Length: 342
Image (cartoon, rainbow, N blue to C red; front, side):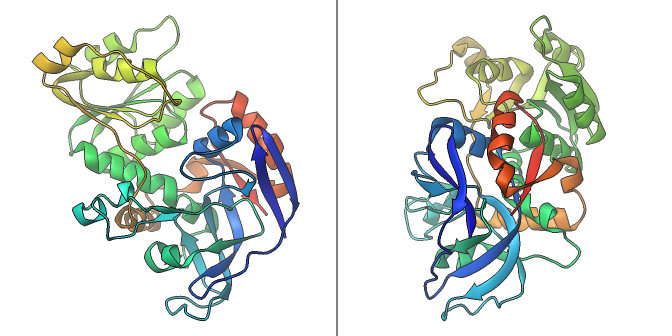
């Protein structure tokens, strides 16, 4: 089969590799759509991911496709079914799993390889985090399940409620998903971004107000002006930069909550005003990854029509063009997703 193999920093080759062998509980899925992701761009830039991928390896993790083969021990699925498989599955036995924190599982099994004609879904993910796609959901819509599940968990962990004012900083695909889902949950959304195209998309997806965050703009004053001088109830940082983390804390009211959702580069440090945090009783949280519960929830949200690929996926490219796509995304931060069609 043809697959995109990452060999190191910005070293990616689309080349023939062996179709994966199956174990007793595994599935072989023909990939019908694999979506690009900001994490994949980071992996491409750095040449590795400490927890998810060690080169040389086929990478990519947002996918939907058709089952073409199943191990002898598979009972839940059959050849021919359309499925979406998450990129991980917890052990359900460790300290964190027993406390409902499956995303922090000490033995979290990751799976990569979506940028290929076929992908092996390992038995644990088959059993715990793979789902049949309802007939009315298209492949590209289904492939949004993984990033959307992370967003849903972030909103849940942050305690977003109807009628809250939520400021979302950063309007790439993840930030736009936060805008959309906070609106669906009944919140008033203020979208903070740098580009007019992003702000326009945010408004289309439900943001009541948009705030420009350019070099000569003051989004903190703008958000406070829109909230009677108080600040937002919740701020969600979806950029992944120390400066945006620091700014997020300034956007919330007394007693507000900040979610540092965007992951910063390794060894990053931030400087926070301890007096502001203490005397304003600001809660700071961070959200990482997803759980099987949130994967199921995301598939339901997509099935109900609240989220569609047409709002988050700009176009399609063949697998052979993946290197060009990755290079383009490197220089167009916050760009919408591209659907790779092997």
